[in-house]
Image (tube, rainbow, N blue to C red; front, side, top):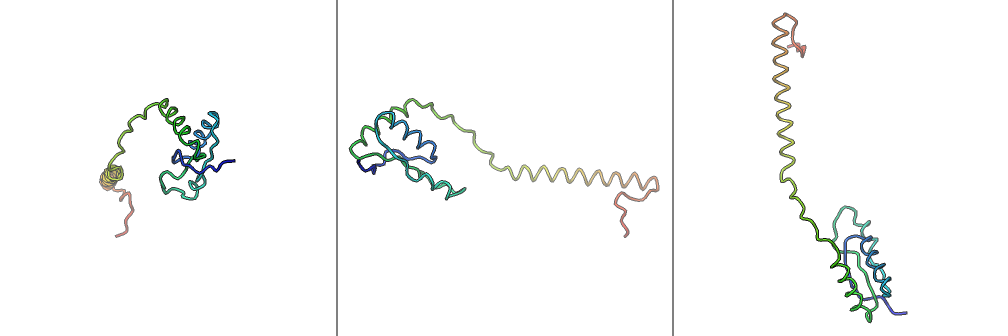
Length: 126
């Protein structure tokens, strides 16, 4: 059995590497996936293309051709919308206005209560 040492494909996800490995298997090329368990070790830290598909050096050109044909059949990636640049600021502004409205409402309630001789809503003992 030949050593499967030639890297022919790299990706971030093990599932994608296994899809390519199965594709190569269907084409009669023995392949293996390396580095699939590095994903879980990294946790939330992106490590880049850690998952690799390897084949025998004598079959590498054939494997790359099969992969290239498969990649041509894949739909083009849709452009992604740009993420909001300052979501924290917009939430801060929202909470500022909610607080300001609450303070104004509280003052209005205090004014109405004091006009009727009922004290204040806060019952301050100053």
